Length: 70
Image 1 (cartoon, rainbow, N blue to C red):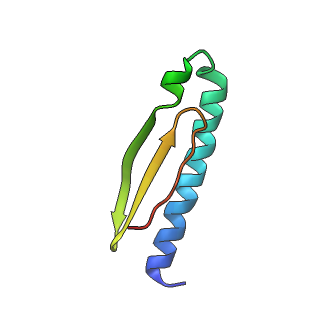
Image 2 (cartoon, helix red, strand yellow):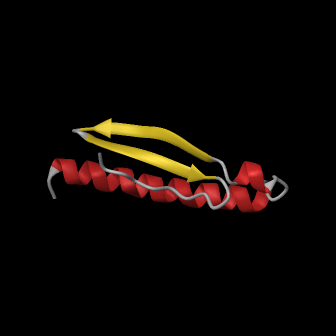
Image 3 (cartoon, rainbow, N blue to C red):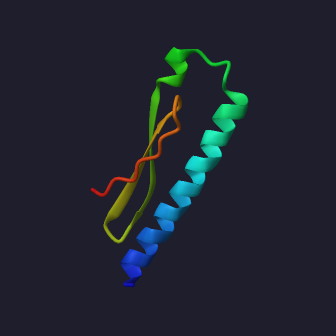
């Protein structure tokens, strides 16, 4: 595996783990939030490495984490 693919694979694995943590936290702690708050989408830049930018889109209602290559 090339270094860039290895970095990419590591970042994807990290995002998947983060998604599991977020899903668990939402199920356990945020069940009382209104649907309006839960439907908000937060966009954060995770990291930019070797021209690969991963964006994390977290929809708090489902805690969806989407890796996007730009």
